[in-house]
Each structure stands twice: as structure tokens, then as C-alpha cells.
Image (cartoon, rainbow over all chains, first blue to last red; front, side, top):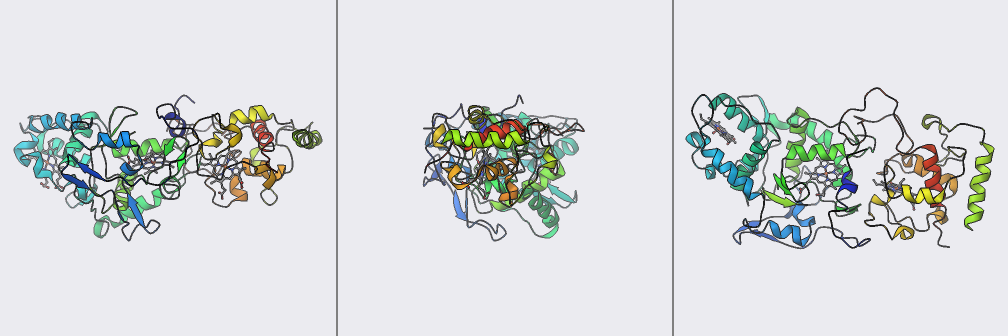
Length: 283
Length: 157
């Protein structure tokens, strides 16, 4: 057992008083750069039957970790955004195009993060932002696709998210996306691995409690990509899902798999009403 | 007091001393409790205390235990285990540690002496599939006995 678990892994990295239990989300409020107010708590949407309030993961982090996200100069995730802003302008692939040639400024993407994953009529399935980016690269630019959870990709998703910060997450769960959403819900409540724990066991039944050294949040994804102080890089939604499934001693799904796409739609929908925060900072 | 309990475990152990460990699939639960020692060998409370803090045991990830207050980061998912031996008999404690879901239906507590019935069983914490080999329980029969031997020392009355 070389890999440490989530329970044990971060014990060394955190400085908490042993035995001192932090409970529940804190009362802090978040405004980024002094001008983007972020909704970190609101009424749960009707389709999230077992919660009355929903909270951003930011509310469960220490004051020190929270502070990193309050100003873009302190947010290490903004370096990824800057890298992606360069890629955005850079011509790549056989069609001789850059993202900017077709989409204009990155700010034109405002609102996009908030509604993804989303049903794509042309492809006849629910797509994530990563899939949209790779679709443009492959079919519209004639460029090589990026690895689903790779640095280039996650930086680009961070750029696209950053221009939607403050907007409410609002993914559509009805209509043609319904079946995928149901599949995601099923996965959310399935107890996996030798520890037989589901997402819900930790993030619905136990949020606000300590599990070993970790203060459990609701596992919301409004803050993705998240810059984690633990691995000092931006982390994509599916990479995080993979880590959480692995920690139940289960065989994980692959990033970009139909299962994780469905789970992402479902988890995103549990956060409908919270503000887009990405790139956020977590421990 | 401690001696009396260890004596009791020894008696139970003696009755099965010649037997091999009870296989995870052969454990007999009566109302969530398991009467017979799983290993046939008396548990070692000091080893049990260590298992509480590490490896596949890691009980304090979810439980607070004042007797282990020198260790950092006790979780809150389950109840504090202080005085747990006042609330449960040895057989009940063994049943809870072996498979808590028999005593507490749908419990969040992992089943430490169980080898089948998992969904997408992985190869420990690798994220890979387990493969065809034998599935080892999270804790061995002797480790369960050691943990139980530690739990019976947790008395308040």
C-alpha cells in the first residue's frame, strides 16, 4: 500500500490542534478582488432532496487557504489562466486558426462554464467543457487533442471558468440530458470499493465533520478547476473524482469516461445556485 | 479489571485453540455479535491500539478515542469510543469490528472482515481493478482480535 489515502495523506500537511473538531461550514463571505461577490451558500435546488442548504467547498477551508482565493494576485491558479490566455491567441493545427480567431476575446465565453456539462445537439450527447475544447481542436482547428486532465486542458478550462466567476451555476437536467443525469445520480449513491462508501456517505451524510485530518465539504464542483496546495497545481473535476473513488479502495472510472461525464452533470446540478468560482484554491 | 477481560478472551480462545482462523465467509453473527474468537489466539491490546491509528484499520479517522489522545486528528463520523466496553460485550465488539453492517444496517463503518459482495473492488489504493486473486479482508483475524482486545480496555464505569 504505497499510495496514502485521503484520510492519512494530508495529516502531515495540515496544522490543526489534535482533537479539536471544526464543525460545519464557517460564516465567512467571499468577494474576489473586492468586486466579484461569490454566493457560497444558498437554498438547495429541489432536485437535491436530501440537502436544504448548499455550500461551496470554500466555506470548509481554513482562513489561510480561503485568503488565497480573495485576490487574483494571491491565487496561484491564475498562473494557469495566464498560460491559457497565451494558448487562446496561438495558432495551432492544419486549419491555421487560434481559439481567438473564431471566439474573439476569452470574455466572450462568459456564462459558458455555468451551464456545463450540457446536452450537445450535434453530437447527440452530454458534453463537458473539456470535450468542447477538444472538439474544436480536432475538428475545427485540425490540431492535436489535449489529454483530458492534462495541464494545457485544465489551464484552458480555468480560463473559461474565470470569465464566469460570480455567475450562478445553472446546468440543465431535464430534456435530453435527463437520462445522463439519472445515471450520474445512481453513481453518486453507489457504495464502491472495499470501504463501501458512496459520494453521498461522505459529502451528503457527513459534510461539516472531520474525517481524520480532513474537514468534509459537500464535494461541490462550482470551484473547479481547483488549485490544491497539496499537489501545487490546478486539478480538474474528473481528476478529483478519480481520487475520491480510489480512496474507497475501488477501481476508478477513467477521466472523460461516460460515467464521470454523467457524475459531473449530476454533481454540478447539486450546486445550481452557487457561483462559479474557478479557479479556486483548496488544500 | 483489564485482567479479567483478557482472561475472558483467553477462555474463549482456548475453546477454539486448535482451530484455524475462522474464514471471513464462515463467521457466525447472532444479533450482530460474534461469540467465537476469529483467530483462536488471545488479542494483544497494544497491537490493537496501533491498528486503530494506521493501515487498513485507521479507526480514529472516524472515531475519537481519549486513550489515544497523543495521536493527531481524530474524526467525527462515528461516535467517540470512550467507554465502549461498558456499552457492548466482547462478542458484540467483535461483531461490530468484523462487520458493523450486521449490527448497524447501512452503517458508514467499513466491514473489516469481509471478502465478497463489493462494487468495483480495487487493488488497495491504486485505483486499478482488484483482479482474480484472493481478496484479503481489511484486517486479518488476529488484527480483529487485537483491536477487540484494545476496545475492551475502554471502560469508564
